[in-house]
Image (cartoon, rainbow, N blue to C red; front, side, top):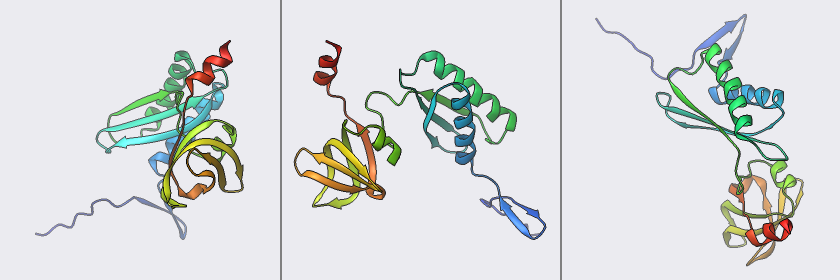
Length: 181
């Protein structure tokens, strides 16, 4: 007797003539994290899912203007974990990490670039722009879907947001110490 086994298909649910795919895990986690962050007075910054479905790490970044405390992370972590565990949509044990994005925080969205206009940053692009793919300098402004960036070697460069592969703030300790005085 021969059996047919389907592996890797996403379950489909029928509602009349329409079909609906199950909501992806990442999207569900984002929705849960956004609600947990907002209800606890912090901003949801970003989430990452690392590893495999059998050994998953869910990393959530939160922030607030005066900085995130350990208590903020703990409270948001418990709120997220409670919903994930109640909904039981992650098929195996997982590790949940909730933290601040840090001093040299990653920049994930146009909104992040707008928020940190005037700050030093490092940007890596998916392809070369004016013969260069790594930029180190200062965020000048955001115009539509382009980041105007003052690069140390190239001067002013316009970087389309869809070409940004990775970006993060760079902390200048001498500037920070001058602010404290």
